[in-house]
Image 1 (cartoon, rainbow, N blue to C red):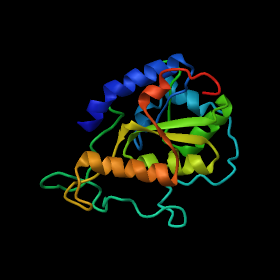
Image 2: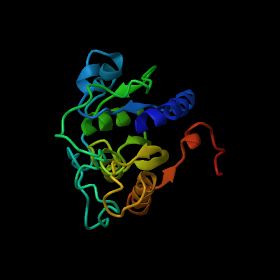
Image 3: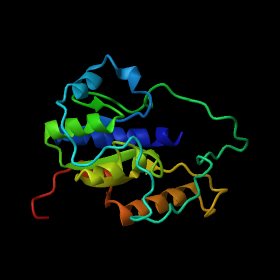
Length: 206
């Protein structure tokens, strides 16, 4: 439901960003197979292989030498159901409300994303989506790894959400829990921007 609330704003931002030449990578983790026959998938697979400057790990865990522990307790997976049931895979594709179009690509593999960025000459990466304390930080295509690869990375702070149960420490609202994770990312990994910052050009030197 929370992604559903963000999706219309994401679509508006991405539509404007595409018009400005921004490349859009969709990364629906673990369900990329759904898109295997689409041009979005085939386009990124066609990028030539490039050797990365540092290893690209399947998952980048919290790094005690660089950051303190996350400010929220997500040790239970962040589930906030009143009566949690056994975990199961609840999806087979990206949220249907998020539009994939034009020259967009789709991948959940850090090597593929790195190859594509090198092919396209990408140096600056804005990351949005879910979840700020999990995939947005830890996946092979996400903030920790992209930063180590030398990209200029920013988090789109109004278009992300944390997986957090307010019944767990630090016992704040869900929105406040997300804000705490955003602050953690800003302090230890990368700056943040607003979605609207991707919808307009800024004069050089501004």
